[in-house]
Length: 236
Ligand SMILES: [Ca+2]
Ligand SMILES: [Ca+2]
Image (cartoon, rainbow, N blue to C red):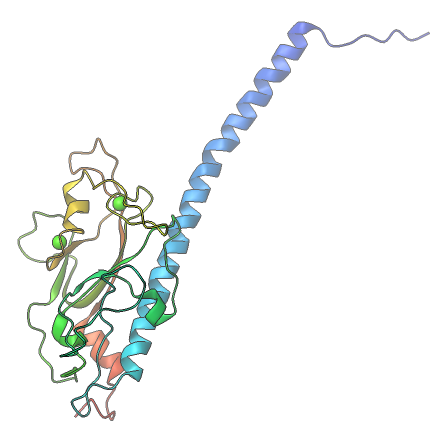
């Protein structure tokens, strides 16, 4: 005759502790995995947006013969580029990626709009650019807002920015604004001037402040090589 007995309270407690430890060990890497996947997804979105901008320049002939031009940023939030309709100039060279005009993703992996800044003469439909167009007041990529000269990349024609996981300073897809960044380097990506910051992320308690923005840019030389290869009409 067999005697069946259940688990004692102590046995149950030990099992519960083991299960808790196992779940805890799994949960942390899981949230880190999700974050890493969103970062990779956003990098891919930025990459595709950069390709779409190049495609736009290749297929858009300026009013001046043998010249091309870049899209203008969206400044009203409808995803369509906003240029001066009378002059065809790109008077506001800082805004959102014109995702409707380009047919690209409208948001990063956290549901926020992407920023897009371009140097105006290269986005002017009236004059356009060719390989002989000089870069006047190009954009610069720095590793800190205090940099005296660009230490990441110089002679940049356009830059794309995702506000990253924290989203500070972003407008989300529903149109609501998130709080302004607290870190000086994230603020530098929001002030619409010529300097943008690209560096590894830091937490709010870091001496350099909180930073998690993701950027992608294009130099003047690479733009000219891609859009106006030797032998093309815009490469005299
Ligand atoms: Ca950020
Ligand atoms: Ca800036």
